[in-house]
Image 1 (cartoon, one colour):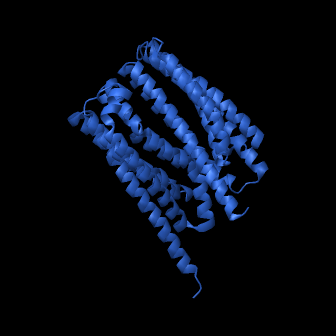
Image 2 (cartoon, one colour):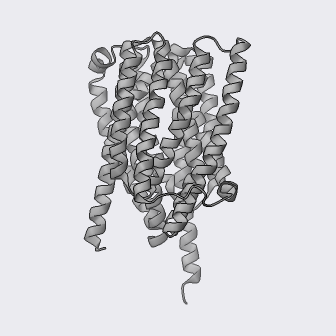
Image 3 (cartoon, one colour):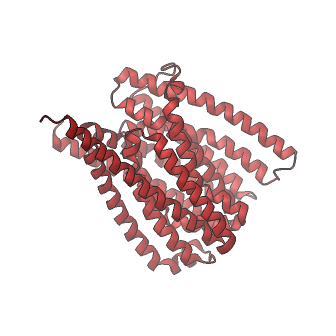
Length: 429
């Protein structure tokens, strides 16, 4: 393929990813707005907690197989790719079905012992059942994106989004909106996953009996990346549970609703990030660490500029947005919005610069950095909430993101310096 053809394909790929993520961002915004405007703060707060939990399990899945899958797909032939994708799907499905069965039994026991009430018990059960199709959909989605099939992913996500928004609106007529909204999310994930699986079967069918023992093979490194994902979730999303335990569900709704206003930028970054791992891996392989890091920094700078411009517009329109769009007023809303704005820009930078250490498989170091960031973030959040209320939670989140971003930049620069020294040492005299 010519250089012009490669550039054209790259532009189409990223355009599809941007449109795709804009679609998902708009859907997330629409669902949350429907629940914020048409249900109580407590019902929306419960929905936020379930979404945070679903994000955790999908992050665990992606962190476990993602780096190993992408690095192999770039060098495997068609038959080997089919075996790998089929083996990963088969063995992961067995693990998640077992965990789901245990979780259902534990939930029923907790309900019978009155540890869960008539609201939280059914909510947890529906969340467990929704997790299985969500994991299936996310797996096939990531595989197709690794194959650079973002245009086909977009088509299936349209159906998912339509069902998701329709279900959320229908849930507001239910006596238990949060439970019903999670149930309709499960239906949307089932349909979306089926469409993605059909697309993969037409593009490059998987071999369901391929790559036996693949999870054990990738486990030594995958456990480190998975541990890092858990730790990172603990301060990027787990603060919601800390807020619920330290303050109340209404405080979760306030933090979640205001963060929602910044989600289009973060979801745009995440959407592009879903394509960046295979791309960064290719840059590293073809051009070396310095070029790969430079290009990742350019992406981070561009997305930061978009985030800053978006926040500027949001800040100017904040009075109208809270009055007419959210139809809610929260205590300390301006300070919460400002803190979330700064945090969102840091998250955008972090989402891009993390890929060089990942492609170099520095999972132990990444886990240590994330653990330090999470410990500081959660500690500051807890102490801050005791002293300042809900504002303290975001001070902790912001602190953790600062440490994480500066740490990732330092790790990347160290990788570049090591390769420069290695190149110098092997150069002919």
